[in-house]
Image: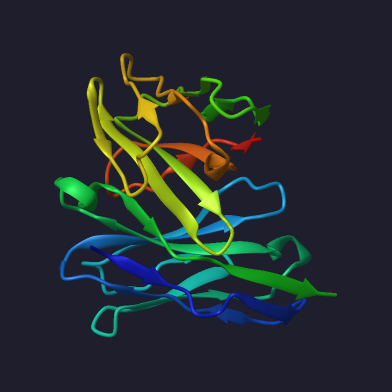
Length: 118
Length: 112
């Protein structure tokens, strides 16, 4: 079964600075999808960014970008020019392309709580 | 507006009293799923459905039931709730395995 590990339970960043959140995963599959979700205090789960494992190019969405290292099974999220509204819990998630058994699910890490300091 | 709607947002109930949390999506998505979120554990899948009448267990299915009679609806049923089912529950849907899930607003359930 796949596992997703976020080793930083909490992080903080100064407004306008850059922060990187870490995520590693364990899988024997060669094709899969990786996601970062944001959960602000409203508790709504918001998709931030998505990466397809077969694409070498790192995904970017405005101020959010990823560093995808497939061999190292690492998928970090970089937030540039941090804003107060970026304060939230961030979850890394893995989704298999297979159709059988537990491979159908989206597997989440335990989350990183990001604080943005004014 | 494309969305996943789950109700209620908050629910306090007593041990053993059957309850249903409803979930509906208006995006014609094939895949739907229920998750529970507990502090320090992230989100864990309860049940999964890849189409009408097709459901599968996730990591923590014990004490829960689901049904998928229509494509848009995927209710979560707790036949005899217990205090260890106190949690934040999310319904989610996606168009395909490669797409991200769209989540509902969550249901905070407390079982006393």
